[in-house]
Length: 127
Image (cartoon, rainbow, N blue to C red; front, top):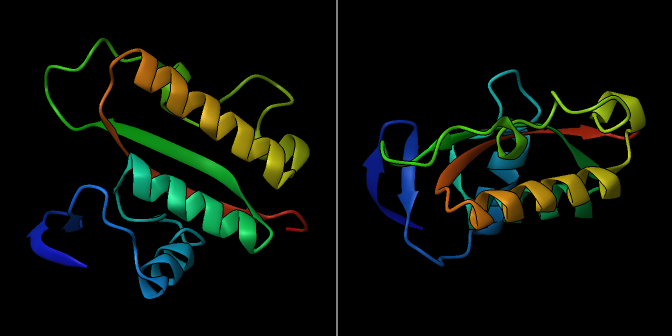
C-alpha cells in the first residue's frame, strides 16, 4: 500500500484504501496501550468503521496536527476519552454512539480547517 516511510510508519497515498491486512494490523494495535499508528483522517475512519463491523467501538482517540500553522488547538476535535460525563466509552460502551461522537469531531475539525492525523484505541461493548 505504501511507497515511502516516515517516523511512526508508512505514509499512505491520498485516497488510497487500506488492505484487509492493514486494517487487521491496525485493529490489533488499537487494542494495545500504544494504540493504532498515526493515521490520516480517511484511514482513521476506515479503521473505526472496521472496528464497528467487528462489534467494537472507539474507546479513545488522539489527534495531532500535520502542520505547524494549524488553527489554535481545540480539544473539542482532538481527544475522545476526555469528553463530558455520559459521552465517554466507559460511560456507555455503545459502538454506534462512539462512532457518532467520532464523526462529530471529524466534522468539527474539518469545519475549523484543521488537518489532523489520528491515533485510535478500540474496545468491545463487553469489556
